[in-house]
Amino acid sequence: MAQSTTTLHALLLLSDSALPLGSFAFSSGLESFLAHRKTKTGPKRTSGPPNGTEQDIRYFHAFLEQSLENLASTALPYVTTAARAGDDVDVKQILLDLDNDFDASTPCTVARRASISQGKALLAIWERALSSSTAPTDQARSLGAAVSDCATLVKSTKPGTASSSSYNGHLPPLFGAVAAAMGLPIEQTSYLFLLNHAKAILSAAVRASILGPYQSQSVLASESLQVHIKILIDRYGAVKAEDAAVSVPTMDVWMGRHELLYSRIFNS
Image 1 (cartoon, rainbow, N blue to C red):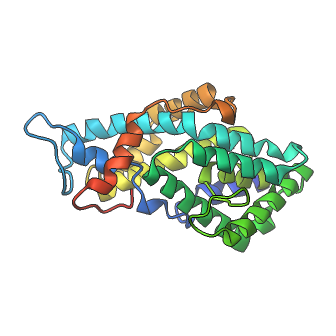
Image 2: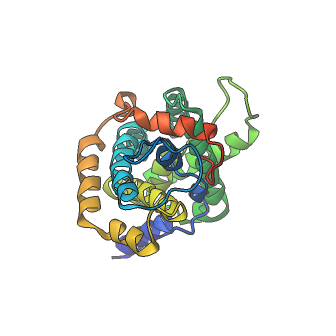
Image 3: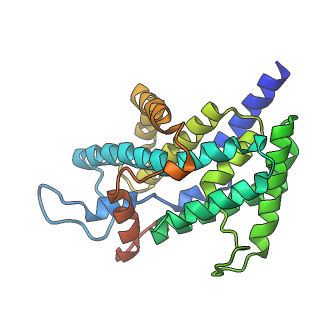
């Protein structure tokens, strides 16, 4: 029962919207998608806030579903691979390799910047608040020590360098490692990673005036979202990091074109 309580506590901590990861600054391409889409009544929008019409809401639901699909196929394998790394001898090297591979497989500059920004924020939280909550198992301690080493390494890596000793600090492998270090099983870690992404997109939709707060909570509480996340975990949860692949290429297009908007309220 004590271990169950500890796991629940870690789950609630990592799912808290107050966790200062900086995800509120990003829309994962939603703002760009809404601005560039074509409407039935006129040309594509290039700037300005969306109107929140029924058509906007239908477009948003399609975007949310496809964004989760793409995240599950590209990032979830890195989350689960990192979470399983506690059984290996050189855990730190595995995290470094995963970070390097994820960086190399993320051609979109905007997506790469968002991942690094949130990854570094997670490392800062780990150092200042979460490291003392490491689960009492050898695997968890090994992962916790490796995450702490990564936090030290990311502070010593100069921005813009590209050497064998450089470290970026991407979010997916770090999230998997931190969650496992705090005692979360892989199934809960996977679900939490995808749910947090859905929460971030819904928060962006509220601030972009697509959905109201109650509509947003309705989507979060819906059975359809739960089923969709479970399907994605079944589909991609066992995929190895080296087999991760983009499933919705247009997501990179929306995120990449975000910087071309005349005005914007999100960093991506």
